[in-house]
Length: 125
Picture (tube, rainbow, N blue to C red):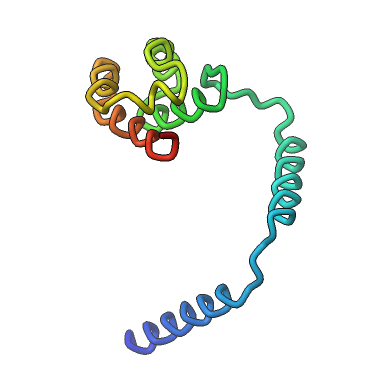
């Protein structure tokens, strides 16, 4: 019995994979249009949502979101001002070593998060 179910499952996955390979890829214009539609629906459904993470730009928001995965937004808002004073932009963070970032995260009880934040250097630098 279990062999039968496994075979059907494998066949189903194979058929889905084949179908996905043969679908036409979305053009950039189609992606932009779809994203616009999603944004409009979200704005309508959640008109007054405010981000609880304090940030001045998308770089700070990205770093704050990464840190907030391990603790509360309130805790992130307490520690990010010091981080952003030390590394005010993507360029300064990209030139910092993990060792330079890690001591701050340890003092925040976010051990290991300095390494995660440091991985942002790859696409930036």
